[in-house]
Image (cartoon, rainbow, N blue to C red; front, top):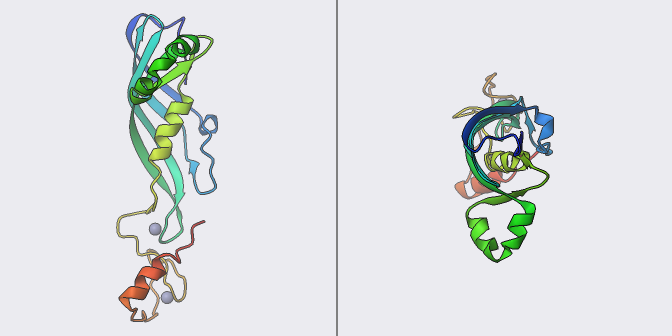
Length: 174
Ligand SMILES: [Zn+2]
Ligand SMILES: [Zn+2]
């Protein structure tokens, strides 16, 4: 996902880019990418300035927060990023705040590297409480069976609602 600015035609062009997951530094403890990252984008080159907008598609392997099973979580993220050569943007440091607002980035050696921007947009899409399916039945708190797959005969304790709030914090995180 690197665009060579020297080879980009002036004006608009379209690209369908994809990279293997290992190009993206997203290998946290709790998730991995489960396949290639795809980025369908429209690139506008105006002299040294390059504006990229498009749609990123990827899939994470995430542990469900209820049943703890790993599942495939597909994400789509809209992305827009404005790139200027590093030297040029340094001269315009006064406008730093303005650039941050415009989602401005820099590039060097004629290479617009989209991986960091794509990575950041994907990271935002990771859910705080991943769920393998809507209404996942989770694990039985008594015998631990995955209630999506098995039924058990455990009788649920009647839980004081105030304690039920505390129980939510007992969900294992990793
Ligand atoms: Zn689940
Ligand atoms: Zn049970």
